[in-house]
Image (cartoon, rainbow, N blue to C red; front, side):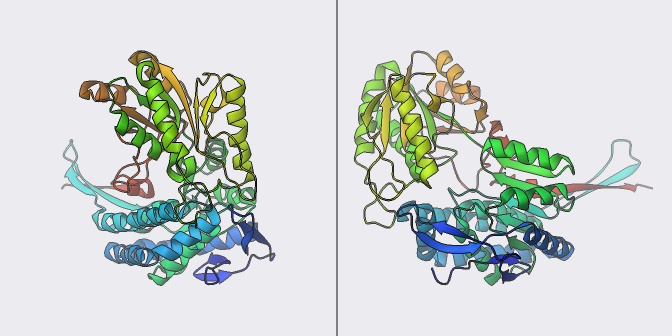
Length: 479
């Protein structure tokens, strides 16, 4: 990793933090320090903002095809460096190399998708109903953006935000999570190589998020915030955006229900559960959090899931044949331990896992719990770990009510062979996305996002670029 940048990226140049501060990046599989990166403070944030503001006017005038070609080149470079980027991601985040390679492909696809959307930004023309004026509609970039990304998908969450911003003609300040800054810095280097002009993307790595982000949001020059993270932090950022009415899009927490009806194909349901629960070690906002299984098939489903979960190999993500890497840090593992202990105290039965291994690293075994009490803490919070908590239900109305009984509404999963029931239940679920007989909903071509306290707006799909564009209406007299 000697060739991975560790400085801030400001105005197209690499720079140390103004006060010389650095922060460590740890390997969650060993606890060892991988690197020290620049730890930005308020002065660095102002420099990043200034670079973005200064670059905005010229970048907005750049031809759509030119923006498209930059994204296309970046897409190709990312794919060419799949192995190096995957190893970098595994080192700082922990996911197995196979999953990391999958994320590289997923991340690259956002660049390709939005390279195609860049040349399809359109407007409109027509005569207004009173006949006195023609209406000319045009689209323009919203302006300089602050992009805040999480640690669990460090490359893909960067490209999912950068891609539409570049396509729309917006400049950016990117603040990645302090646990995983290296992937974002590598991405900045790739975009520079692809021809992105200086100042369009600026990256501030920091452990002082409040000191860096709040002045930007309250200062009046940042016009758009795109944030992925917890609902609690999202609420705080919304309050900070209110002073200057910053446009916001947010993908926040989830508490996904996974519903298995009595007529479900259990092979498909278990396969779906393994994806929805174990992708990224369960550290995903889309992870199945609450398993509601019809009483008549609950025992068989639980036994099958436990066998599959118990067969997974836990270890460092770089190891051969490893299926499950470490959790992100000691605090993340402690949270999972506490949630499982609480469920067991309330009567849950452990079918597999449930015991923290000794030794270095933040490992936690794949765990299946049955007889979970509805008032268990893990029913009302994101587990963010490899724990499947199974509850039973008897009828459709009951399970829909329980599935919706949460302030979050990101995604839900439904398994049933009945077409009418499948559509009916999907429509009744208060979520932004539904996996119907599948455990994977994420796709760059689809709009990603939730309802209620799971966020605002959508990322990806044809609507993803809309979050970075404004309409302008011009009235032109007809005579």
